Length: 456
Image 1 (cartoon, rainbow, N blue to C red):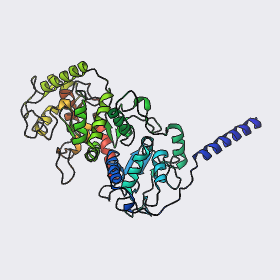
Image 2: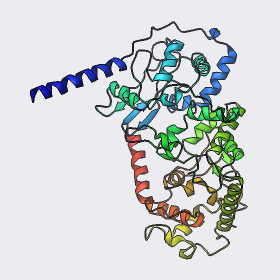
Image 3: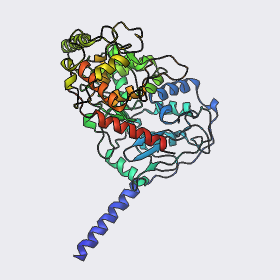
Image 4: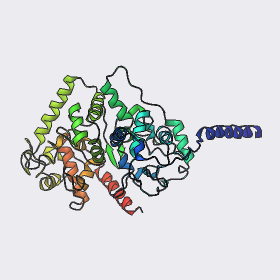
């Protein structure tokens, strides 16, 4: 018995020793901060476009903070990780990082000092970037304005706050290596696939994750979560009633509005703002690749589009407060199937008073609403989370910029009224099954918002 126990201990010790040896990374020597003139302006410009595609500023800039100086909270099921300072400050940023150290962080998830980075930093995507693109990103970041701002330590639950667990995660899930073009596809498709899988890291939000927080590769881009919002599927599982076309995807990603899908909202707003600075050809490539994931034949695509448009038109309100080309709002129009008893009652009246002025055909705000609510992905999603966010907080352009505007009703409607109007919108404008968890999802959104305001 003792021999067996000792044998097990020896085996475990040897295994741990081997793992530790594999996980150990030495420090890469610091360098003096390179002069701005050390970098080719054309390479810097290319890096700026790639940083826009990678949305680097989003996670590395806190609200009201200096660009790329860090502090933005990235919430995970295991705690909060804060975006780091990636300005070229030599004390608190990456000013003394060599290009090799920067490349190791993107490819292997290891910082200059040799510490393993948590996968909230999506190196599982960035590892696919080419050396040239990494060099361009490095040139761009090293020519930003240095900011002396110390990084905030991550708030991760014990024992996952040990960096060694990040190494174990990588051993299980990280596949290093540049993107390999598919010879069966054309150049544009491969460029789009490279950007989506690599620097764009679309799967970080649009792919479901397992219980250890790793993306489920067999369900790539089939829907996930980001910042408390549902990130809808981008493949054949897309809930969009009208199948996406390349032109519609391009319009949505480039301008934040697609006529048969609606306006960008939530965490996608800063993504679209960044993509406005990317190369036009790259945005077209992303759109072409995403459309290819649907794999619909032209005839089926046309049939689905026609059916969705006809239904949306049949349910659209023709004048403020009026009903569609059918029964007046009420139980007979589908409100009875909208959700729990009591919540659906009154939803149509609330909609008529608070929403119909803008959300009717021929309304006075044609650039501030989807063409039809029935075409909105938020209305047709598998769950009510996104529609609740929009109703609670509205849609607003950045301060000083033009864009879609919708007021939030968080303080104007009670929770019961919000549940009622969401139930009505789902029942009246969508052909999908009713949501039965609206009240519980609304409660969780409220609780999460309160927790964020209370966190120091």
